[in-house]
Image (cartoon, rainbow, N blue to C red; front, side, top):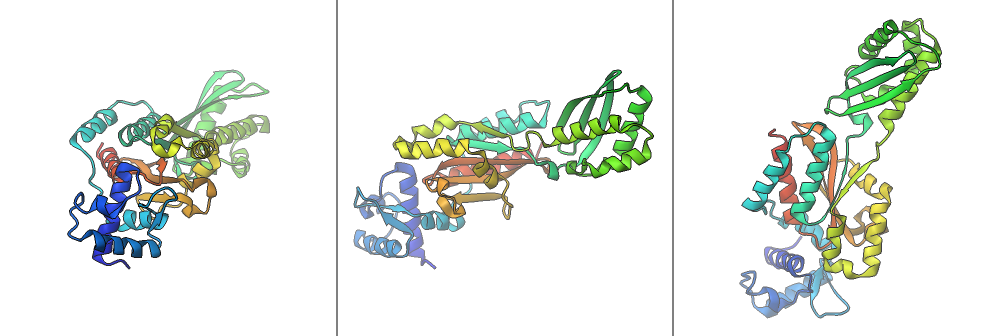
Length: 335
């Protein structure tokens, strides 16, 4: 447990390093951050912070930089979450007021806005099938051997697919399909469109398996496709930061965004908080050692639309990112 003086000094060190990307000396923070301590006192306290693992020495400078432990304390206990300007608020409002036809478009706009305001890379994933409930299933006859199926979920997401058959079907069969599927599945999770449902439908409809089987197979396919689709925005912005002048760090970043499994795992991790912060390799994944990821549940009118995250260096401006995320989340739920 750090005493108030050490906490103030650690906060000043983290703020200064975030702002300058340069190792921090005692002299550089005395007056700049209004610390009412002498340089000698700050040096002594910095030595203690280093021994405790909150800051560390670089190989090329006599100054100190925050460690992952230091960043963690900063994020959990020292951060300000109202770091957003009036200009940024107006810009976010204008972007989120854009009319969209599909919820997926709202996710893209939100992710893009977050990247533009924070100047980091944003990643987003939609709600998983197991988290969405069926509001309606509609079958429309397109020909004697072709149907269009439309699934509308409670989040406003629309999934469409074409189903082809080896034998003719008639309008009466389509009407029965609409009745049976909606009667059985309305209000149920998308993942409940599965093979065990086949026996129930066959028991309710005196139709050939050749009609039922392609319906269930195609519905399962469309429900599960793009379940791991990631929307990425602002990947180029990250290379303007000094950390990414290092070829090794740049390569690791490219590998990170190319390896969908790592990002998806973090975006889909259980949410104990509204906003979650992963610093360096806290997740025990060495691919993340140079980066921090901040994520939040993307909701519209309190309906879960998936997860949006920001990827940046460990020297990320956490205060800015978290402030912007909180404001965006608030505005979306006011709509």
